[in-house]
Length: 398
Image (cartoon, rainbow, N blue to C red; front, side, top):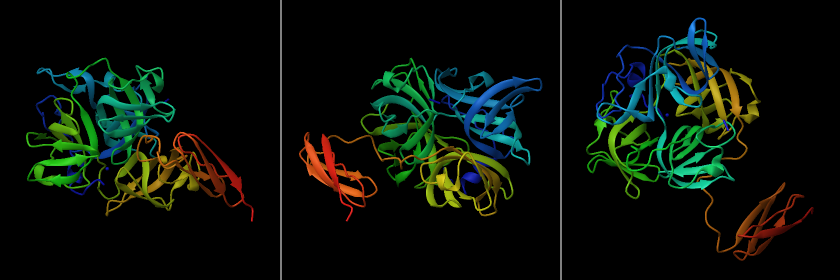
């Protein structure tokens, strides 16, 4: 198995994190102004005569002199808190990263000045469906497929509810992610400090709380890092929540709030972005990680224009326009969307026994739970109705 990003986030994306950030999750960055040129997952790492490199979104970045910061479950600061570690050897394939540095005009090579990697999820597994390739962690639904890098697991079937995982992933919508790396840790609760990525919803600045998916975040005692301030919080804003301990029910007490990765918004800045298509209007107009894409003049590889739809994973290389739209010059289809991602793990058996069948048309059938449902399929196809059991359909050709 192998963000909307707001205008107020622009400044955060243009300046390397300068906060030492106590609590073990501070960036420790240099404060050097440097454009964010890439957001995506690490495809590979290696050594060459000129030094160390990593490949992200098809770009080979020289990281020989880069400040590399990776947050991992096994790293601790002097206070025993899990946090960032400045170590190139901590970078692994499948990790999601934000790269600050420079890109060549052909989007083939670049030089990284700063690399930041933070998992989108860390916590106990709530549910596993190995057959459908899905897990849930703190209410967040995660898709695991053949492109997901597995660490410590022979396969998803080996994962059990209650085990602690660290997940690097690409968001498709709030509470729904496609895993690029899934790591099973040996840590146990309550020693693990949870991490949850998501978009702020139902913000209550008086009670100092908001929702991330199904999880209520209480931030009254939270520290704000990397230029983020309490007054900047807004519904729809993507961010990382770090907690000191596991959630109680659906309530997670935040220790640190950190802004999500963001690209440079400087006009004509070259950038590369990996993400799952959302807000699809056409193959020329859609969004990746909250960034609007203009693909009207893009060269497409790895697939065709009709492969671009909600749920498809793409790499986009291009330049930012003055209004914050990424004007794509090159698009690579990494993964086609076989089906639109469902909104949740499979629900329990339907006690009303209703089922739908599609085969060149639509078939609807009713049955008894745990029994058989009969349906009819139109448009020269067969329709199957499932209701906790099997459904048979008949074809009408008119």
